[in-house]
Amino acid sequence: FLSPVPSTGDENLNAAIQRFNVVVATTGLCSELIAVMYSSVALNKLTETNSAPAESVMALLMRDCEVAWLGTNVCFLLGLMCAVTMVGLRAWIMTGRDFGVLPASLTMAALLVMTSIINDGISAGDGEEAGLRFGADFMSLVMRFGQCLLTKILAGTNPLLAVAGVVAAGGTSIAVLRMNAGGRH
Image (tube, rainbow, N blue to C red; front, side, top):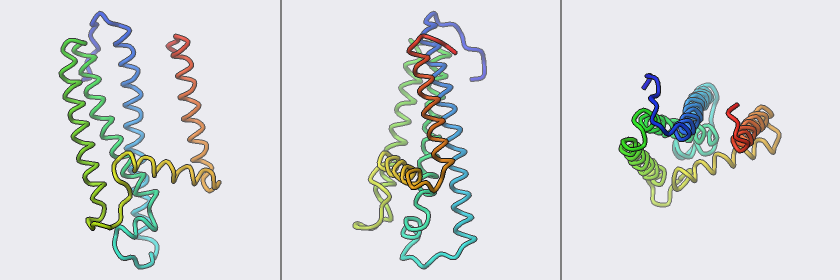
């Protein structure tokens, strides 16, 4: 996968896929690093502070570590999905459109299986029929995580989080504008 990209004759498509692959790679790596940060901080918090008793570990996590638990899980799973996607994209780029359908299909199948496994685990919650759940599926975890982050931003309790959101949104906007203008800068 580290070899130079062969020319397939469809340079515009290859260039677009290569740019998308860079975005996926960046998103995946940053997601994994954020997951490590959330889990490290949560572990430290759980071991260094006295927590009030809770009915279960799930209840403790929901009460004291919701954002960290959501952040760890959402970012870790997103990073894994990005890693699988990068393999499929790189295989497509290296083999061309005709054969690239095979690795793209295998990658999509793997992503669907991963999502199915994730959704089964999330929907089970703490295992009790009317028990505790962070969400019904992966997308509900993503939405809840986003809601928690937005709440922190709007409460003004984490200005760096707000700046990070502005930087990410601004960079995305600039990239989209440049792509629409036909530039490669």
